[in-house]
Length: 122
Image 1 (cartoon, one colour):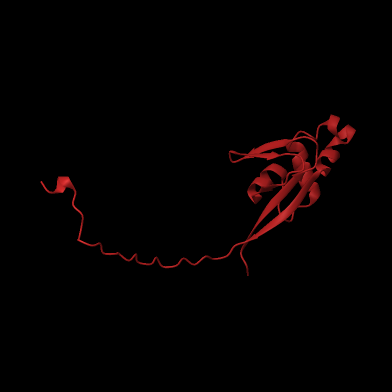
Image 2 (cartoon, helix red, strand yellow; image 1 turned 180 degrees about the vertical axis):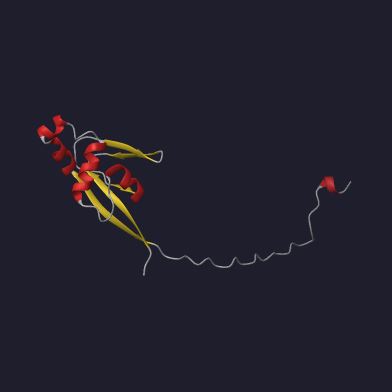
């Protein structure tokens, strides 16, 4: 079995910037610029997990960004705004790295032995 980490890439296709924070780290979702999030940040901000149904993410996201108000729901902007968020699962494979033993550094002898400074001769 291969070890892996699953993250989320979000592309905001809305015509406005979305900002949020997770664990003190700001996340800025500018229009049409993909942003990769660790899974724990994706869960916090969008309610996303790798096997999460889209409706669960929609409910969480609309509530988090205030798109679930009666005014938004009457106009349908909740569906419009959420519908313009593109979620793409990103899988990273973890591979073991074997460190090499440090090699000894060869000392090169100098001609005439060690050098002395003027202050050493007194």
